[in-house]
Length: 407
RNA sequence: GGCCCAUUCGUCUAGUGGCCUAGGACACCGCCCUCUCACGGCGGCGGCACGGGUUCGAAUCCCGUAUGGGCCUCCA
Image (cartoon, rainbow, N blue to C red; front, side, top):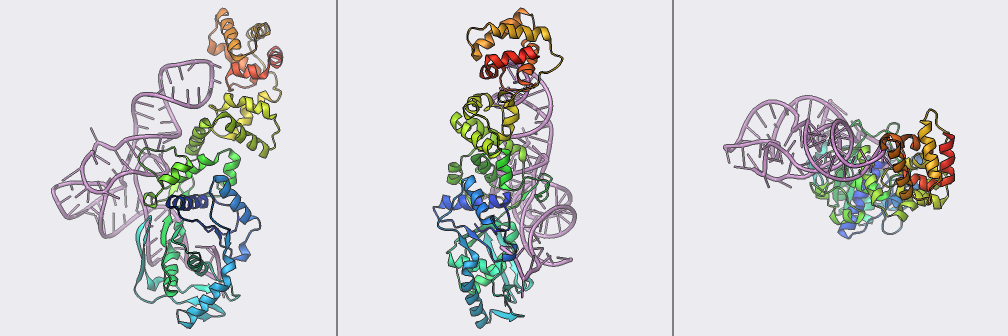
């Protein structure tokens, strides 16, 4: 995995890394994280840290220390001079250019796209070492691939046209070729390139929205890859067990945020309540919402089936943590009858509350559907809420009665 | 403009010449369940870009066209 430290990690890049990781772990191989920082002018401070943090959040790891491309600059320079000595490269205004073969073709069997062939005469002689002595990506990258013993290069399709040059360089260096796999791009919802302005693209945006790692990983894995014609839900371990480059499709995919929402909901519902509470607490903490942990934990059974993103949580249960303004225009007779009924209840639990309110509604000759709605509105301040009886139990008798009387 | 790549329901995909009157999932619509919302169940809508070949037979192979994309930096 070889990001350049020019900013936050783009979701398309995350997906490419995921394929690298799934492949390496599936094969029992090693995966390296190499930061391609030869363009010091574009380097963004913090980016290296942030990239690692994002990958770890998703659950992607790597073997050994992080490598930096600049660390091998000297070695690359030496090899460039060697190429000059052997007439495979030449000096040009202080820089060094690689001399492409002038005839014939260069081709490789791409692990996702099959055979790809370029004519050598359309390839330009690329600068491989700048006049200031720093190597450029198209040279530093294959050189590091040799140095690191890279067997498989899995990267975005935007690198397809760099590949013939890198292969020619590797051949001039008399090195073995790695297997190349060029995975498709990810498009935004309009089928065009993901745009920073219109689409959520930074991994942090997804963390903020309240997606959880295994759900996002599952979703990303399915963008351009499938296990078979039926299976959708796959935990990280299952993805590792099943991944193969042969089943990566060559055509670009459009990011479907609604499907991600659904998938995240599936994962959220599968969590046990304590895990769910931990995700909630982390998310709330990061958004500086300071609600008591015990009560947050108590809301879990009320919300787990209802929301599909953690970011929907605060609005959904706010009435349990903060005051609600008394609504206007409710059926006063009904609300006050409910208050009286609940005031005289022996035991304050959801089952008793439900039983009492149901018989009240029955006595009044109302339909449950229409009768419970004003009560919900008085108690939660909203027409949409968790289950009414469970909500009342958790709210406590005192507060519940206050709100009913105020309405 | 040159080179390279891609093209199955709105979206992600299954499909590697007969198993396809093209399967699944999300979305959407309808019904059921139901205290709202959700969950769940049942059903529905909807697709092989186009044109030529090859073949007894093509979503699958070949050619062309169209559309979309990538790259053409002393960026990565």
